[in-house]
Length: 311
Ligand code: PMV
Image: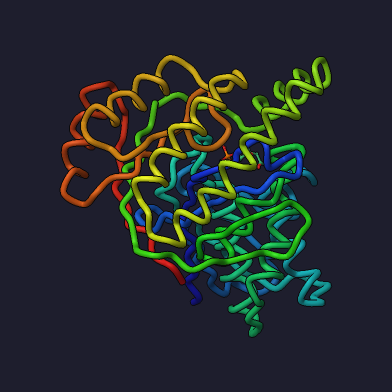
C-alpha cells in the first residue's frame, strides 16, 4: 500500500493577471490536504478509482476519456512507460473544499501522481509531477497559468511567472494566514473566461490593471523577503482593490475582507478566481482568533488558520 498527500494552496498576490504573464505569489496551505492510497487488486481488474468524497467508484478504462481522474492516471502510467495497466485500487480523500480557490483539483491530481508512481517504484521530481498535473488543470480551468500545480507539487511558497522556471524565495519571517470561505462555489473556468471576454472588449484598460497587479506582486515578494508584514498586508489590500476594479469580487467576499481588517488583520483580499470561494487575511499570531471569530460572524462558512514557512 502506498499513501501520498498534497496540500491546498492560496494565492497571496497576482491572480488573473498571472494568466496574462504577470507574476503571482502562492503559498501551500498545510491545514487541508488531498490523500491518495494505492493498493494492489486482484489480477485482471484494471485500475479502480474510489473517490469517497465525490461518491464515485469507477474503473478508469470505463470513464469518459476526458475525465480528469482518468486522465491523470493515464498520464502517470505513460510517463512511467507502462502500457498495460496493473490491477490496482486508488482511494482518494480530500479535506480541501472544491471550487473555492484552494487548489483542490491540482492537489488531488498531485496526490495521485505521487502515490501511483511511488507504488510502481519511481519517485518523480516536483517539476515532473507539476507538468503532469498541469495537463489536467487545463480540463478544470481552460487556460490555467500553472500556478496551482506548481505551488502544490513543490510544496513551497513560489513566485510564479507563466512559462518560466519556478522561483522559490526566502521569507524574512514566517507568518499566519486566516482563510475565510464565502460558501459560494465559483468555478475558476467561468471567472477566467469572463475576464478574457472583458479583456477582449477593452484591452488597454485590462493590460494596465494587470500591470498594476504585477507590480504589487513584485513588491509583495520584496516585503515577504524582508519580513515586513505591515507592508505585505497593505499590498494585499491594494491587490484586493484592483481585483474589485477587475470585477471578480462579490459582496460576500468584500464583507469578509472588511470584517478581517476591522478585527485587526494586517491586510486582506480575495484569493483565487473570485466571485465566491475564499478570501485570505494576513494576521499577527495574537489576532488570529479574533479575525477567525469576526469572519464567522460575518457569515464565513468555514475558517482556516495556517502558518506559512519557507521550504
Ligand atoms: O484555482 P483558483 O480559483 O485559485 O484560481 C487560479 C487563479 C487564476 O489566476 C484566476 C487562474 C490561473 O490559472 O492562474
